[in-house]
Image (cartoon, rainbow, N blue to C red; front, side, top):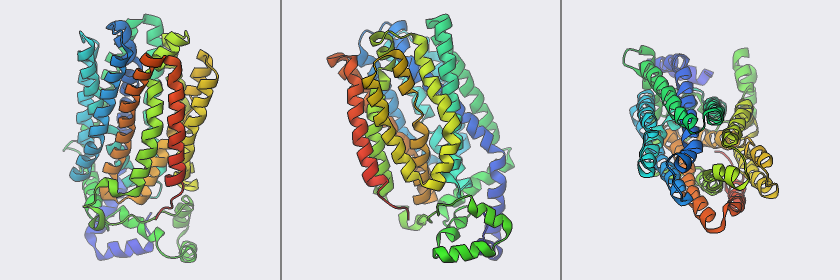
Length: 469
């Protein structure tokens, strides 16, 4: 949205006017490529995390659950260590497309060779390689989209997470069907198919981000300017809407053209102007209170969720007597519901406030594990595990980050959020395996419930209890 003030500043600075034109033109071509990348990331991720443990237990004959969950934990740890670094590379280079293509290509290679692994150790190393390569796809893509839709950051992020959920659904339903129809060979085929999807996405993104695309070069320049110049578009278009009193904003909106009024009406929650990079570029990312609060809530809640997820296939098939196919159907149902509500949740976060949406999502995990602990049947477990809570936490977290952090730190901050979830997955996976081996599978959901309660308290106190600005 271009306000009279930003138009006047652009008129005085021709380079800024050109940057504004580039910002309006750049998103048209690359957006579908980034969405395809998110689909590929979701497909590969669900195959690795859902059917990696199944393959280790049934294909490689691994007898110890602790070893299986350790492999998943190391894979998640790789995401934690590299997600922020991928985002930082994207912030500094202004070339997120090329980095996304490199990551997808590396993941495709590792996935294609995973089913030929001769031992659990080799298979685990390949799984770690997959997640390390995929770690940058979402942080880089979310940062790019929110920079180009600064007035609706949560809705922009929701588009990407909806694409990722589409990949989860395709990977879950497809792998579940293949596992039911072909058994262990179906699981191996799932690895090959997800590798093919990742390779296709890498090629598409590489073509869009390649040097032959003038449109992509202009997008990269715009991102680079936003990361180094607080007055460049699109950040210059955020500040006027966030300054002045509410009465002044109302008067300016009433006097603006009809198109400007319609655009302003689409964002009832005012957007604060993030501090310029000059004041915050040297601060460690952990000095931002929003980053710490979100990371702490996610670390607790996701640790409990991942503790159960790491043993979910064994819990469903060995403890409750379900089938291998039900593992994929449970994840596919959750992904499908997430796709359906992702866009409305993004709009809800922009209107109702991302802090409230994030806290609501964290609190939902308390209800989910309470149901799993109370009703121990395959049908009840699948139904509870399919609750679409991820869209609430993802759009809420990215919405808070986009509204409160400067553009120069946004990719790194989103990488920290993704990395915190990955660290939680690492810790939770190890905890799930240890609890299952020491006390039995029946006790894992109880641990998950306790951690979800702790995470909900943190979110309620330090995320929902703070204000933007």
